[in-house]
Amino acid sequence: MRELSSPAASTSNSTPQRLNSSATMSQHSEDSSLLKNVDCGTPEQSYNSTLEREFEVHDIGNLVEVGDLEPAFSFRKLLRFAGPGFAMSIAYLDPGNICSDLHCGAVAGYKLIWLLFLTHALGLYVQTLSARIGIVTGRNLAQHCHEQYARSIRIPLWLVCELAIIGSDIQESIGTAIALYLLFGVQIWAGILVAALLSYVILGIQRFGARKVEALFIAMIAIMCACFGVEVFMSSPDVREITKGLLIPRIPASATVQAVGIVGAVIMPHNLFLHSALVGTRRIKRAADVRHASIREANFYTTLESGVALLFSFAINATIMIVFADIYSRGNSAKSVHMAEQHLPGLVEAADLLRGAFGDLGPLLWAIGLLSSGQSSTATGTMAGQYLMEGMMRLRASPWLRLFISRSTSLVPTMLVGVLFTSRLDQFDEWLNVLQSLALPFALIPTLKLAQSSHVMSEFAVGPRWRAFGWLAAAVIIALNVYLLLPLIVDLASYGVAAACMALALLGMYLLFVYILVVSKVE
Image 1 (tube, rainbow, N blue to C red):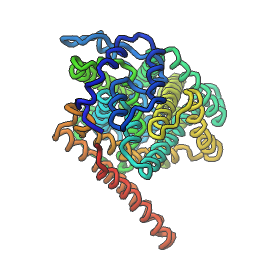
Image 2: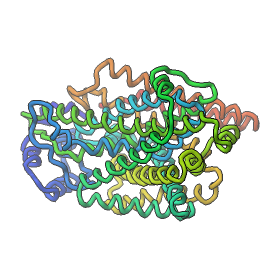
Image 3: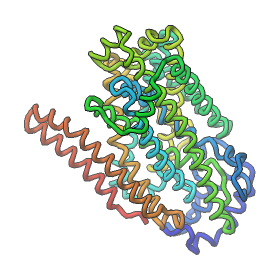
Image 4: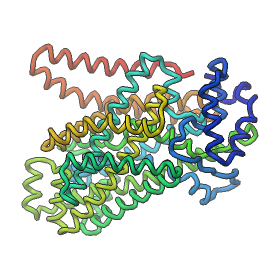
């Protein structure tokens, strides 16, 4: 690859001018099909030609025109960019996060609110990098991984990320199924099938344009805000303790696993691939005379919108943590005290706790919020799987066929978990959060390397300070993952030397793959 400002990239300015003047999706799709079928010459010429077009993947509907450059801040322009950030933030509100919030509130009270805020701040940083890769280069993260990594690296990378998506989808589908069980008494296995069917309906709205599906996601976030927010007002949380929990970093010894699980629950690897693709729904000016200013403006409004979306996400997650911290701190419910002594409550048991604290309205609001969480996150997870499949592996197929493949891949293991392990769903949920944390470096490291590369990002490459911060964050995440795996290795060692050697070999393979991604060059 070459820098975006290379002479080869500036010799075809007629193409972006023609695309920017086009108002229809059909013409753009025709251009994309020509790009796929025509030999563009050398890899450098092919790459530069692709950069001068918008994203190749536009299954989410017609592009959104953002208009001309604005000399000052424009709220109207912000609304035109609003949408991808809120769709991205739904992954921060999935049932896995809700269960993590529930456990943190039950075990640590208000003491982990600061960590929740910190993970959202870190999430904003990595999501901003992901979005900027898409905006600056005109290609999403999965497409860059296909270009940058050899097949021997790309296939394992794809498999790990797909495994993380399947794990996330299990959480989301089962969360939806539990919500349907609480609302209508539907069995878990039937609820999983209903969740799969509803995801087809939601994603079918893509055919009516990006703004329609984004509006639906924002509406679901609003439902979660209303449901979980009302429960906060119904409870009587200690404002002083909430403030201390936000401002004073502390991790109780009994909440170490829950604290580490927050990282895996909040920041999900597939979300980096999703966000870098969703920003491609905004058509920005790429003509040579306005390209720099247009990209800078898009970066600004995208970062601002993502910050607002994640602020809502933090507020919703914090309300859940606060509500259950309040319930467990009361000590006036014999059932909640017994559950606290025996085991952490699951999503179904949480409804019983809310009924004991707030009456019948509590579990009703809980189920409605959980349904919105599960169904919206199932849809965005499926979208991420589609972008990952086409971008990284170049598996070209019709949108509905890719949707069917993505949903079927996740549906089979989800049904197995829902049918065979119904009594252990909460234990599965904790391990699935750990899986997300283990897989995160495999999306984060390519994001950091691409964002800091001047060959890829040109003058928009990340500066030294933010670069150091990103690698420090990646190192902390990897260290936490090793911390999570060491007790497992010790447990396996009790089964004999062979089991211990196998566990150590797997840990070595994990660290080796991380090292390969770190030292691989991005050009």
